[in-house]
Image (cartoon, rainbow, N blue to C red; front, side, top):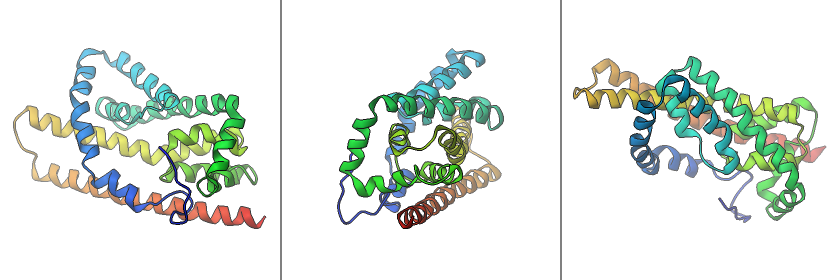
Length: 242
């Protein structure tokens, strides 16, 4: 993803267009349709322990090579539900955000040069590296909630001089909503797939629950994103005053 540093774009990028793409666009639906045969094959081929290993490995390693791990989170929701699925994803995510952080330290000067080319886009990222431990923890958590590409931030974080402690804890806390949304998506896909295979429609209660869950998910994405962006701007202003 490229960033253009122009006067029409505030720190952190525009929220509404990205949300519209993420929620209303057809790309996400098409992606699920294309991935469903692979997901079904994966669940039918591998045993439960092996499936857990594959999910852990993909969530832990994919962000390092700039691949999305959301499909693996969907599988975790389909196979393991909210309890074990969450524990599996959050433990793998700890590895997934740590590896790029340490790898990025090897290319510190190059990443810093990239950030200097886009001062407006990088301003709120740099704000995360200032202040005390609590300030850094809060800023990292908010960045995870914001629309900024998390895979890119994994590598950029080290260039903002944020410490590893607040980085890893802030990352995990900030990723909790995304993880639960991904698990819900997986369970929803499983419900629809089961109804399709059994050739019967969903009951009125199931329809209401699914529609309600989708609406709650949509509202949660909007609320978390807007809140995160506002708080990041506030942290940035405080950092500039200091």
